[in-house]
Length: 72
Image (tube, rainbow, N blue to C red):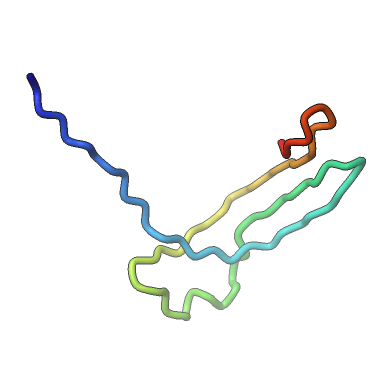
């Protein structure tokens, strides 16, 4: 019998500064975002164990399913 050790993925906290566009069209919410260069946050200290993150491009859609009422 082998002894298996559980491994946990450690993910550091992230700090982001993004510009975001959010709009609704025909019941669907659309979100587009990306990092904001030259935001001035580079000079501000981060909280302990936090890494400054960058978002190249982020796209998302969200809507409520008419059949079961769940958010998709």
